[in-house]
View (spheres, rainbow, N blue to C red):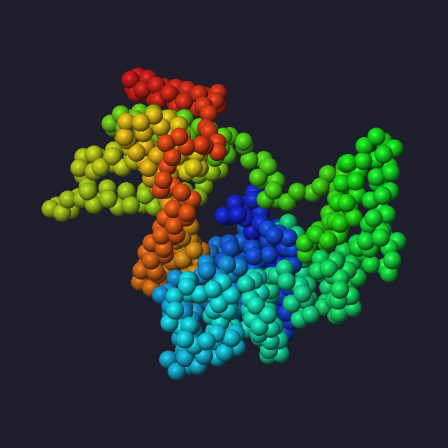
Length: 589
């Protein structure tokens, strides 16, 4: 499809959270036959915007369409339009994040799988893509992980070119490329535009890509601002610093409000060395009159060099000035506001891990004491009340609880069925129901624990508490390291599976709900997933060895220590109070 991309009031939250917006009410149009650059600070939302266009981010609000066809289908908009998925391809910012096949040829064939080309056509496309991006055919049999960063970047682009999509969505495509690779990329983009196809490119490399651009769009704090046609860029001085070129481009086309005219030689927006020295001297004299020159001098240097910040600094400063509220306070994005408003006691460095673990064991012991469904119902009220304050950090675990509940119901139905005659006996199912309910409540108690402490703080707590055992030959430091690695690996497994689910949508063109892998793809993905986990474990072992974890000194020096505070005592007291209150209620029943 060679029509235009249209985003209308699109909002995207972090993990689907409406309070932590990564993109906020974005409206933009990307037309075929044009190369559009996305520029902005690191973390401004460029990658999020590209992933949203590619259907890799769920929309909180708004709509996305291509050539009039909606990207999201269904009443709940939880499935992607497969016809649209086949019309574009995305190369992610980190090339290595998309590898999972044993060699480069298999990576290319996996990208081609949704298009179902014949063997001859697939080979033709692969060879053409390699030639365009400058990769040698002998690299096809190599593991992508053994390639250099630049070769991996070229391979990622080749995976897109082999599919011959109408739209290219490129995230930092010049990162890691040498001069030859950058020239080839520019030639590819020019040919793509000449074929009346479109490209949206997120980049900081204006030096290479700005001359190619038809339009420049600024992404700032999750908001998108139309910038300018590229003709204005050709009028800029070639020697101007990169950030100032972007600044002049934006102001010259009224995309940003003009600043007060600077009285500088040649009309340049940055000071000459002579002007900078004069300004610093003036500030020194002013500071001397006030009895101190240090701070004014530093301030003068900051002001004089502020224009030479990164690519989006200048437009950001001007836009902040234009949109600042009347009270003078800077405007804060939705994601930043949510982070600021997050309770301090929900941070993973607030509680002592020993208090968190003891509270967990205490409540779990009371839950295991419950022996009937009626008692467990009362226990569920206490557990939910204890977990309610932590609901915001437990949100990502709801799917796990739901899955466990579904499996438990199935097991209970199987356990309570009798076949002659066909009937369901609750008496047979009740013991299993009690055990499964206990396990469910213990899971609810334990889920906040994973978010209330970091693996490193847990390791440090174990070493501080039981370090004396090393004197009698017990390898407590190794035990602490092992426990830390277990807690570190649990979220890694989840993130790695999310990566494979993203690959299923980005490269496998799966139209299923985000975060899930279609059953038909499990056969293809399972073995690579296991290989990926083993590779992560190997990399972690190398990192630990490089940092000296294999040889713990007799008296280690810790960078920090955990301390038991009043808040930790309060947590333990509330856990004990809840448990004893539960026992009293049960006795009264």
